[in-house]
Image 1 (spheres, helix red, strand yellow):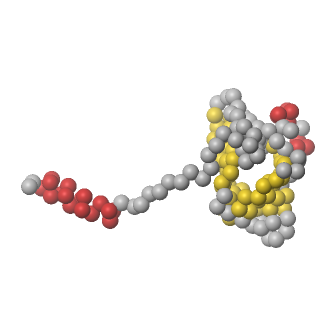
Image 2 (cartoon, rainbow, N blue to C red):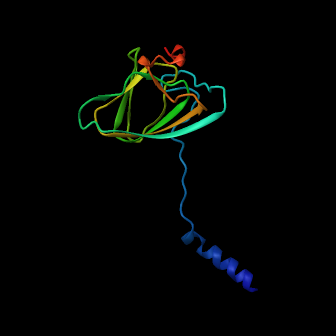
Length: 145
């Protein structure tokens, strides 16, 4: 046995001690948002955005303004909870550890009653806003119902 064989056998023997365990878990996957509406991509040069949203509610209800997304997005609740309410009245609560595909082309708002943190990934297009408020008068508002 030469020195290279000895080193190779030695590395194999110690590999479990050197290698860190790796795991992978898909948290959300689909072609529809949480309400069953289809996800569609916008035309144009792709632009991904990863955003951390922190809301300090302290037991009082904090509501985001009514807004709309015309691009696909997925969110992961790292802490707290959010109640997403569409203007139609349909709603859903997402808690810490939940991942979801958010509604697009629909007016909605998030309501928080506890300190909450979300990580949101937007699959957008260059120069297309990730969201806009209902009272903003955006030309994209015609896409939202």
